Length: 308
Image (cartoon, rainbow, N blue to C red):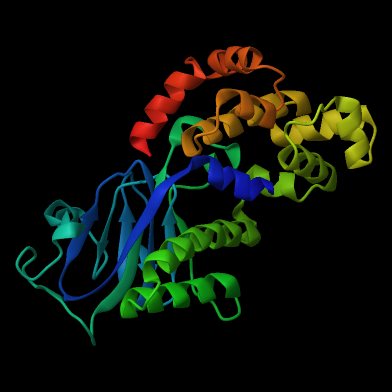
């Protein structure tokens, strides 16, 4: 797997959820902070988003996508929300004519139509690439921009509107695809921070690709430098400067992060997981895991199983 795929897979748990709603009139809906990531896609009409913690309201037009990767609380309204409007906002789940005077939930025509959804995330071991994402990722709909994201939005909107056979399989897969395309679009716009620089560097990218493709291999600095086609000092300097930790330290961190994902998502025995992440014995793996996570692999699996 590549680094971006691994970074997402390490935190994604459970099944994402979404719904398609059309509302008109005067309305202001609150989305509470969430231990995951939220998203909105405007299909028709327009509205405004105001994130908790300050910042100007964001105008959302048809085709705009918004990702809130850290579960930031926010409101969405028919017009720029001031403090008084925010104070009157009702939970989005209650958005109906009865719960919100002046608002009307509609099946077709008028108002604004949106896709709204959430991704469940395990924040116990977040890849630094994911940590770099801002509180709000706004991806405006521009002619010719992000065609894959636009295609995913169109497919998802169609599945949620028609509920055709197989939708229960198609929708979660499309939601996962939407998450990948939103992060990829953010990075392609040059807003990806340090990790855009990391993945744009051929030496760091070659080394990361090797480590993520086969974390169980008996990597050394010399072997990794040969894989990247540079000297060991060059690899150490460029990798450490860009990634923030030396290659072997990153490898140890990634092995244990990957092991945590396997403990959470698979029934594989401890010995099999130890081999998959490069540890010769379950004891050596358990010792390293406990030192890094502060708990044993067995206890971690039991706890992760309850939340996923």
